[in-house]
Image 1 (cartoon, rainbow, N blue to C red):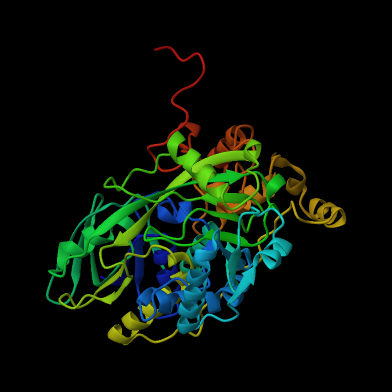
Image 2: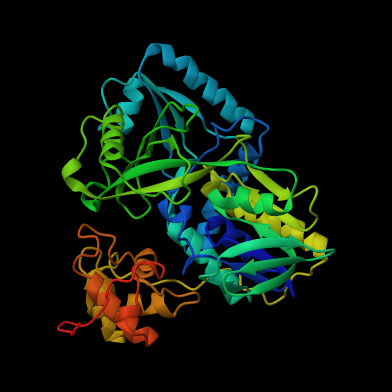
Length: 478
């Protein structure tokens, strides 16, 4: 019998697991994929929103602000790349300036500090590559950019180091409420738990509706992005938004915490919760709309496109907390933007509710943070030489685009909840995240995974077990 079962190992599930690992509780995370950060969290823009665009009084507004305030110290403690670069919301006509003023007033009502409406001249002095057609912008200095993969992975690692169990490739098929516990059925086994926390993204309404009469409804909102090479990572410094609409914050142009350039997303409501395809039409729309914000698009530097699904709940707000008619069942539903910003705060909040319900005590042995992760590429020449002298595997470059070494890949495989797939290595080290997108290093990473995990290379996947790359040996007879 577990005290807590968390369903979903995206950034929300990982945040809850990290926060709950502070307590003397038996906690399990169930994830249908083979690794953490395999759903919506892996297709996130990595924006830390300041909080001006959430309607005052909403749960979104509350957790956006708390999460934003937490982010600097949190990322420093957990070794997550983060930069408070600030953001700009552009207006393209004089008629739109009152809308910027309204956003400023709304942001101030939400508690956002430092908001200012800037003139065209002030904005272009900040960002010379912006389109000359802009007339003004709302400046939010508290906006930031974070590595969404590391924000998820770091918290999952800390949770695991502090005793939280993870079961991967486990697909929940049913949840049944008993008198004072739950029976969770998966494709592999049946699990019992005193409480359940639903952190399943676009599927979160399905799990709520298994147990509660208070029905929820999620509509997947698909967004496509274009990612550019680091060569143009400084094309803009701030995160550049357009005035928001009912579908979100529009197409953004932003540097990433990993020093790439990102443009997107589109925003279309769909009905297929598994559709993360990209389309020529979607990419064309991203580039066309981004061109309204910047003078030109460095399209020759696009290295990949991707898409993600945002979990838009019918109420338009986050649904967080214990379900009224099912004691012990907790929801984190409808966690779309600014969900990444809010994630650590949501984790703390839900863990506190559960700890109070279960009368749990804090651990004196809790490890609050993780060891420094060595990144070879940004080091000075002398520091690289010292590192290679201490471990010759730092002198073996596996990914030339991102300068990722054999030692870094081995560390990613053998860390808590280590990588077991090519994409798992990519998210932890950036091997395969550069301009060739793994064209050169992918086979070598597969070979290293096979050796380090003592697995047949035919069992090593790009992601999950449905994405096996090798099916046989050369010259095998049929």
